[in-house]
Length: 136
Image (cartoon, rainbow, N blue to C red; front, side):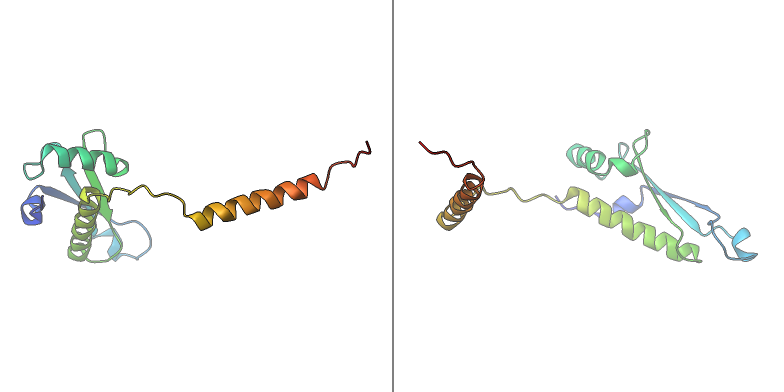
């Protein structure tokens, strides 16, 4: 099922705060750090199975209130940070909802079996050479 990210973006809430780090007088006046919050449980766009996948796969970014929280403070512009955090959100959601390919079980090839047995025989000969020689 394909997600309509435009509708999903309407459910996002943004807060701004002052970025940390150096920057002189200007950094103390402007709020360029952007925090994105997305309430996974309250989403109207996502299905229940999609919500469950997101909660499991993105558990490191989700708090106790079931909110996905992302921060961005790399740029000096609040608008640029907002665009970047939305892009990061889209990528995370796509990755979390991507279906994983099912593994097809395969058997070892004849050549690989032969190589394994040869290496076992070689190791066995090395260890046999370490034994004491006994005369009967």
